[in-house]
Length: 306
Image 1 (cartoon, rainbow, N blue to C red):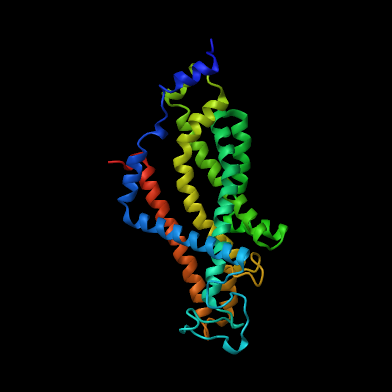
Image 2 (image 1 turned 45 degrees about the horizontal axis):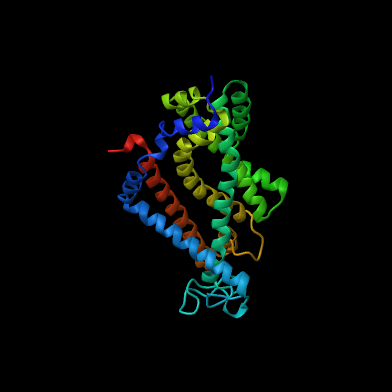
């Protein structure tokens, strides 16, 4: 006989989820990974800079860089790095340093927004498929297999070709591209978690499927979600930059880093700095996310605990 919801909730307090334990140990283990900590702080600093610069520009009209990112100065075009133009100027005389700073919000925004959108769809699909199994699992995973049959960049390219080139459409394309990865990872974690004894004990207490999924299954699959979300952001940034490089992402004059690479493609021999600095920016950010994601994985993986 099922117990009332109030009695079930009280009794469940005695059956604690493993995901709610040892958080301090996880933080300590992550802090011991110095490269991961450096990557984390680097990402936080970039996010703060991007948000502050964007807010000051959009709300107060304040430009924090020596030059406006879209100001054209044909007299100073193709100028190399100088005291006035730290990263030089492009073929239209625009300050590359200013464009990298103001383009940061677009590059990081696409990465975070697309992964969040992909997780909001992929995580529920993975949990439902893993928890209920049977026909539901087969239907969901076959759809996921169809999406996985296409290489990621080609899938995103096909979606953008249908929707049209813009930042919003690139974000949607990269989000769809990340859904299968989240669904498969969460499904595997759900299959392992639902077999644990404490899940059987909670079900025996009369807890509903909804309560089990959101109170106990979801907290236990958060670790792989967080780790893979961090790594997917790096992939999303690369994919979005690749689409913009092909002319199907950010449209002029937006200072998105992939589009800036495309601007410098024709001047690699005579003015290589036009493509060099946006390329270094993409490399640094992606590397920071990968190092941070590896540190999270080491801290959250029970097999690597001392």
